[in-house]
Structure formats: C-alpha cells, structure tokens
Image 1 (cartoon, rainbow, N blue to C red):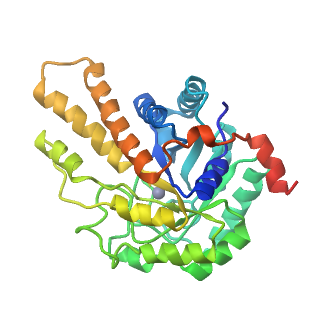
Image 2 (image 1 turned 180 degrees about the vertical axis):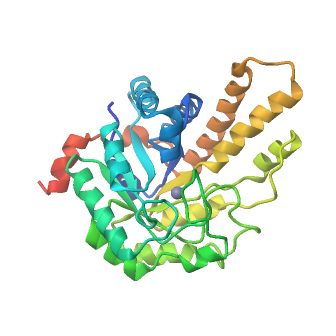
Length: 341
Ligand SMILES: [Zn+2]
C-alpha cells in the first residue's frame, strides 16, 4: 500500500488504546530493522527522519528507501514523518519528498536552538497546518521545550532547566484550538539523547501527571512523547564491555510510557535505544573478531540488534497485532476529511 498519513495510525491507536513507536531512520539497515520488527509483530509503522537524517542520507536515497519498504511490505501501513521541522520551508520540502506527516517544532526559533514565543509558535504551526492539510498530510506541533540536543536540534536545556519549560495545560488547549494540529508533542521533563536522567526518574522530574492533565483537557488530540528511549542498562553494559564509554544514565522507564499511553499518548519517539543497540553489536564484532573487515559482518548483527529493540517497543506500546486491522486511507482521502466533507 502507498505510504499513509500518520493521522490514520494515531486515530486507530486512540480508538484501541495503544501507542505507536516513531523510529528514526538514517540509512538502509535502520529501515530494514524497523520493517523486520513490524513484519514479525504485525505492527503499523511510523518512520521518521530528522533534518540531520535528510542531510546525511540525501532526500532521494531516503525517499526510495521508504518506497522500497512500502513495496516490500504491502500489508503494513507505514507513515513517513519529518521529525522536528525547524521552519515551514523544511516541512514543505518534506511534503514534496513524499513525507505523509510533518512536525513543525515552533517551540524553537528557526535556528532550532532558541526557545521561541507562543505567538511565533502558533503562527508558524498554523501556516504548516494549512499547507499540509490541503494535501492530506498530518501535522505534529510542540509546546514547551525538551532538554538536550539531538542532531544539532534543541535548546540544550539541562535536566533542571527543562522543569521551567514544561507544557502549560491552559496554553496547550489554546494552541490546539488555534493551530488545528493532529498531534501535540508535550514537554514533561524528558530530554533528547542518552543522558536524560542522572537517577531512575521519579514523578519529581518526569511529570506523567502533567500528561494526564493535558489529556483531560484535550481528549481528542494525540499526544506525543519525545525523548522516550528507555536507555536500558543492558545496552549500556554491552557498549562498555566492548571498549565503549557510556556514563551511567537513565531513560524513560517502559512502565511510565505505558502509563502515558493510558492517558492519550499515541506516538512515542525512540531513537537512542536503537543507536545504542547498533553500536553495541558493532563493538562486539570488532572486539571478538578483529580480523573481520566485511561491513556485512558487523552491519547484519547491528541490524538484528536494532530489530530486537524495535520489536520489544512495538509489543510494549501495544501496536503489535494492529497493522492488519487498520483501514488504509490515502493523503488524497484525508484532504476531504480536513475540508469537513
Ligand atoms: Zn524530539
């Protein structure tokens, strides 16, 4: 089936009370790992590419990788999403490249670093919503700011500073009404990258009760958790065992994500866990068999390690077993939906 708008995946997830992992792609092995996991678990798929990924892989390679994934998996609904668009131009160029969903992150200015004003955020997000919905493409917005920096994007806030940039529930209600976004990324204390928390997070730093409050106010808006890798100890240990140097760190526990899913979270962004899995697998091959030099000897186990992480998340978030139940709709059909026909 052709790539589908993200909105139909999130609508199905909302109707059936599950969440969908949004997994980042930069190259062929990563898309293959995601599709292996989705095939095995009959999962709907959200694949996302950051600006950094589009630059690294080149839009043409990326687009054809996505089309290959769709061609080889006709039974699976796949949405292709722009992660953290920094400007309307970035989102519009993604739509030209066949992305079926875009994130306009107006919580930061176009430099992708400086926290912006609420007014700017509404204006730029609304502009993208108008253009995207006119062609049936879904839109995610963001209100509040996350910690850390990923792919050069982020305000670089520390674990303590993020607490001053949490999403305000009053403002969230207003933002959704003013922009018409399909999904809203909320800031609840998480950070991008591996170093999210210095201790296993408690409710003091990971504000799951804020999600519950926002969901009460916006029961029909799909909420998105960014920076939601769990940073499992065993993945840190594998890297360190084979010569790596990851300082002890803590991610978002799976059970907290599951709590979010009970309260309106429909899209869960996971990237770091996949990066850790890939790196650990490659380090293991390099350490145990230093005589090897065929890239397939380490990329194959890397791909398998990432597929295992993807599979585990697909099962934990509840999307497993749902691909076949989703009635696919094209972007074209969504144009009428947004037009209210
Ligand atoms: Zn993010």
